[in-house]
Image 1 (cartoon, one colour):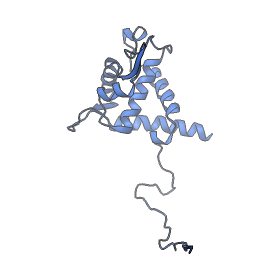
Image 2: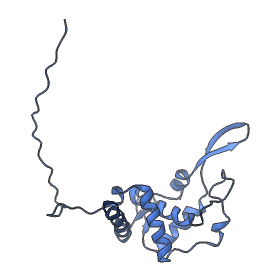
Image 3: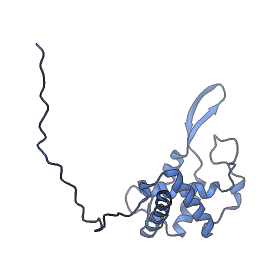
Image 4: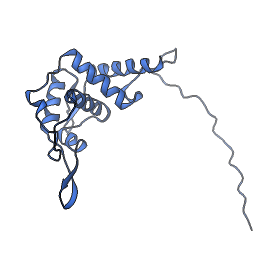
Length: 172
């Protein structure tokens, strides 16, 4: 015998969700989560370079980013791009430290005839970027027991304004 299931009746009515922090015109602010990561990182890197608050270290053209890399980055602005990516990551996750950044930017280390294995990246680059972003008041040390860094209010405002500019350029 074949059992036929009847479709379930929808008992809950669909009611529009009302939020207290939405303006009356219905337009909400744009955050970093609302724009594509690649667009945001390139725009924020250009902003960091243009403002001149972040200075390149002397060793930026010589250094490899990890022990498993063979060459230094080809892009001359790689430091600004990495700083923008780190600022975005701190914005999204919060309580992120140097160890987490080493793991994020790690990769597979080739060892000749032996199997590849995961290797973390260097720690001095994210540490140096953290210090510079702290000096710019974009991030601050976290008070939680977990440690790491978190975004400040002014940093969140700056990053959201860059995201708003990107969103506005996409709509035009």
